[in-house]
Image (cartoon, rainbow, N blue to C red):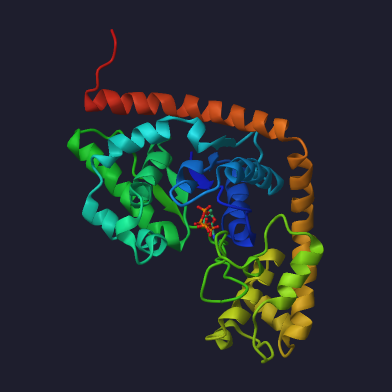
Length: 334
Ligand code: AQP
């Protein structure tokens, strides 16, 4: 049986990219019967400057988004990373086998640290080791990954293998990437070469799961496009990154192929396509936003769900951490 581990950082509101690229597929995995552990990755969120008050709020909001998007907290474990101390503990142990040279080659660190990497925090540098700990703490067999996380998962596999070789054991199963056939990479509404992101400066660049219908319609109306009509095949969209992005979003929301969408809209300009996309986006997202708002109106209930999920995560992970420490020869009382 597959055991899945994945998470999202409470850095801000979740957006359409998080939904179509991750959450929608998490629900599919859960519904296919995999054992799923989904976390609010707050230890990762503090590797960049953050607002403490905002993070507690974002943690509840993300949990509400998971549930509203279809994660069943009575089936999947929905938990907060920092509520399971094993993540940080295992990270320290694994950091002794993560090679600096490999960490230096991680492209996400280079992107996030920017030009002034000398001043970047150790946490940002060590982020992939924490990710390895997240996965190995549960002996997760599969990790849903997008393109941007493939390199980190490869490092997790290497760390697992180094541990097993060093201590002559098969303790950690190497986690497999779970490439979702239907996962969609959603790009910024303002620049088709940048991914839609929580931390991008312009709110017009993304559709948040908290946006109301008018805001969604406005953002789509203002999305960058070009003056040409839509072609009847995907290949002809080469070089038109913004147009391709809007077609991709339409296809993912409608659960159709991009070819089918283009057949439907071939010859039409964005004056026709954008209102159709706005209607579709509102019809798919409004029920999720509505449910999120209902859940957010009762934060105590969200806290209860997170506390239960975190307890379950601690129960699953405690023996793995203990066995890891035993293998490494740490002292244990009588
Ligand atoms: N634009 C996207 N298209 C498809 N999938 C995406 N994901 C993020 N952006 C897109 C997927 O969402 C999951 C959670 O991501 P995260 O919270 O770890 O943050 P991130 O990957 O760094 O993405 P964000 O939303 O842009 O956050 P910030 O701005 O805080 O860095 C992951 O599975 C990711 O692939």
